[in-house]
Amino acid sequence: MAEVERIPGDPWEDEMGFSRAVAAGDRVSVSGAIPFVRGVLQGEGDPYEQARTAFGNALAALGEFGLGPASVVRTRMYIAHARDVEAAGRAHKELFDTARPAGTLVVVSGFVDSRILVEVEVEAYRGAP
Image (cartoon, rainbow, N blue to C red):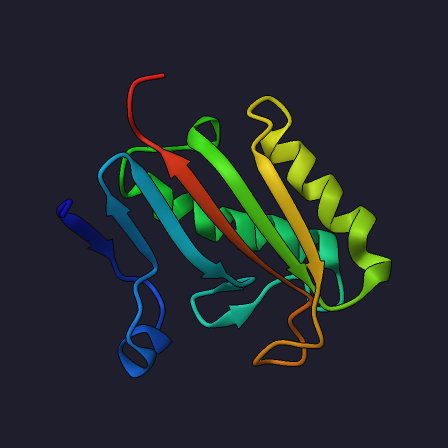
């Protein structure tokens, strides 16, 4: 079995038993990232700003492994309202238009904090191209 590296970053990690990011071999997976910075919600009511912040948090976790947007091979966006597809998609395109990872966008019934409109996950590859 491959050695697993873990990066902490969320106060719920210990409570729920997960890691912000995990690397196993050449793959790095980042857990659901939400639009909070130092405990403060960013972009309240603005799905574009929330998506940018959530992806920024996810990319910061990848940065701990020396990776950036070009290493991302899969993204998942979870949004609370179908009306926010364009806003979340625009934020995604700005960050990943060059990399063009496989992507999924799902409308969900809600999040742990009702002010959250967007949560994201990313997976990256850190091997040779």
